[in-house]
Every structure is written in C-alpha cells, then in structure tokens.
Image (tube, rainbow, N blue to C red):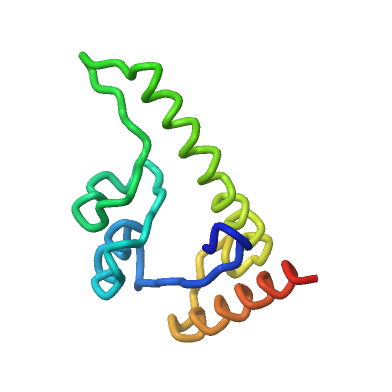
Length: 124
C-alpha cells in the first residue's frame, strides 16, 4: 500500500494456508534494499531482509518494555492501522472474507478487480 494515497500497489498470493511472512520472504528477492516496511509482530526477522524495516518490540519474561519502546510501538501501530483499515474495507467483499473454493487463478483475477475498484473509489 502506498502510504501517501492509500492505494494498493502490490498483492501476493500462495496456495492454501501460508503465513504472510513466508509469502513476503519468497516474493521480495527482487525489491531494492532501500524500501521501508512497517510490519506487525508476526514479521519478526524482517530486518534480515530489509534493514530499514520496523516491527513492534516484544517484551520478554525478564525484560519489560521501556517507555521509549512503548512509544515506538504506539507510533508503529498508529501508522499500521491504515493498512488494517484497508483490509477491513476489502473484506466487505464476501470472496475475501470467507474461504475461497474455486481455482486460484480466478481468485487472483477477482482480487485484482476488487483492488482496482478500491483504488478507483479513492479517486472519487
């Protein structure tokens, strides 16, 4: 998603139940290292792929978060919430909110149409 205009610029898929980070690792090999990613806590280890990336800090059993870490987590969450809002708007379409039982290539085409429609609605 483009942070300036909130438009969807890229989508990736995989068959079956695959974690987002695994799809991310397999599809970002050709992206420049200068890109910045803000990810949720499910993307621990993203720094190995993109040095400019950030994820929320996690507390450990014997190491609570500092006030600075909490502020950073709040900042990351406040930026990431726009992505979650887009996800919720896309899930208005039943094809995205339920299990898809047809061919994967038709899902890809239909999802791109939905994303194009979403982007078009942003322009109006």
